[in-house]
Image (cartoon, rainbow, N blue to C red):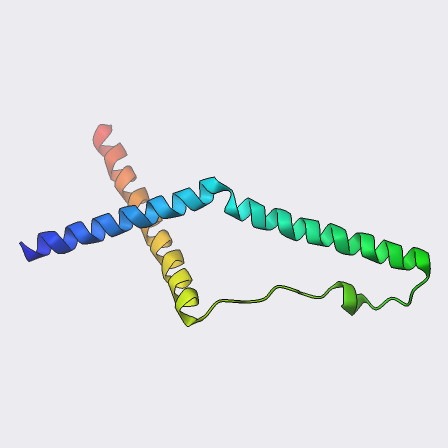
Length: 106
């Protein structure tokens, strides 16, 4: 009986993690971050062009600064690494499952 509870817990946990990953992907969060990076780059290009037109002294290090602040800690980094590994194994398991299922259909 105890093994069934553990198995159900693992299955439900995997299902919840999958749904969470799917919602994040569908919400466009990743695309939003990429768009923000692109906009910052365009702003930096405009600032560079303005400084060139005005004849200011140009230091490339000033325009290529990485203003991103890392707010992560050990817990978030480890959780992220665990999620990446878990997604990799789930993909392998599901691929094998569907391969077996496809052979059974044939």
